[in-house]
Amino acid sequence: MWKIRERLYLGNYWSGEQALLGPGIPVEPEGITRPFAGVVSLCPVPLENTDAIIGPINPETEWLHLPIADGGSGDGEFEAACDLALPFISRTRQRGNVLVHCTAGMSRSVSLMAAVLCEDDAELNVAEAYLQVARAKGRALGLDPDDAEILIAPAWEFRLHLRRRFERLPPRSERSATHE
Image (tube, rainbow, N blue to C red; front, side, top):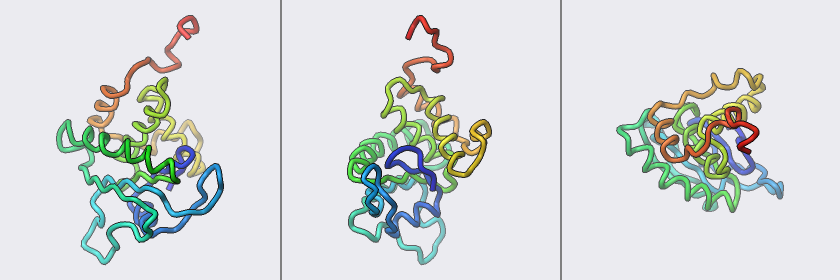
């Protein structure tokens, strides 16, 4: 599990399973340890036919289960997931920590996390949002920020949807000082 921003975590399947089991982590800025307020699962849970518990143990944890294929099953699948998940994340994040996870934490969850960052910051473009996610994940793993992009592999369909949905400005590095 990797902290991306205050009250916002990215994870893989194991992280999602742990969050649904209800252990608490500190909620910023208060520092009070509580179970996750929200968990967004973008992969089938359980992944295999096991005795895994399906759904949150703690009644404080809300679970949004949106199993989508990595790369999507057409143009509308990721878009529909965003339409449901973004308001859910915003609402549950007001109460505490939120985890967004998929199987590996590299494509589906990374793309949804980039969408959250674009919603949080109207000046952030999609490429910058993906880079912020990669760098936060890299920091959590102790990697050099310049090497962090190897930690994410968002499907082109997800990138395309996010560009259509959020692209407003060129990257900050391409904006001239006279336009700011």
